[in-house]
Length: 426
Image (cartoon, rainbow, N blue to C red; front, side, top):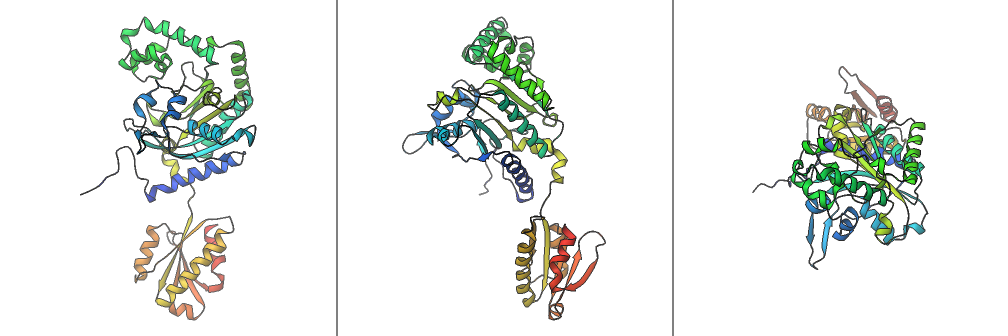
């Protein structure tokens, strides 16, 4: 019997994993340099965590969650997004006592039972950021700046940041009534899902990708027109700060995001390389969520970006990611194999500890011919091959061959090998 991975849950193969590792490395380096600290939550949570936070009528809860009962008949769910588990953890462990304002980030898999398509898998991976403990517009602008900086750290270009504000709960309710009144006259033209959303959660109509619904909402009321004076001033300040930071944004009046916990500032990043499903990152404020889930009354904002989508948007540019230099040690004879192992450890220790380069040292431990070992070195992308034969070893020598086309081969003293390798990889 032949087994295959579950549809929409793909393997990340060794030849592809390097790109993922580099994105994760750059994420950690970028975020930790600004004081963000990593948090890791379980992949399984009580289902109520997501129903309470995301909203009972959202597509995620009604259609997409992987929910099941365990042996004790508890309803559990594979996390479909990262914010709700972090809020649960924040409350459970009283993290507000640790610091009045926390800057957190996470990297890991999420799960949604939706139809697999380009850039949209059932198991997908996110880098996310949460700032908990402030309602300041400066924090909104900083979060957007961090997202912009993170994407640029990946080498991504051509993305667009879309910005909107949903206002406070009263503003959202007022806008929902205006939108419902507008759409009721067009109900017959709405798709079946949006006909249901009209009565249960009208803001979700603005998220619909059905072309007829997209056309209808283009002339719908503008949520910014429903903002109270305080929320309008907050949004205006966010825009002023972003302008001062020279971060370009497009105001998108129909941007609401697909999760009920959002209030105030919301934003989304799109990229043309992804086609119709062009969002690669999104986020916003959730100032009521922590209190609603039983925690302190404190403001918060966050965002998440999809790693798979970033990789798609990068296209050929991901091939330029820096990869560790590979040094291959070819050995001829039993004694040379033992000395080869010693040399491999020496190179790893003395070169990797320099923090200038990261060296992968490969050594052949089979009874392979030199020709076969050279082919293996080439296949593994080696920058240089150290050739250790018994005759050379008796003389305290070894050979180094550059693997670039037409690369030279030189015989050197065994004691000079580290410096010679450095010349070829630094």
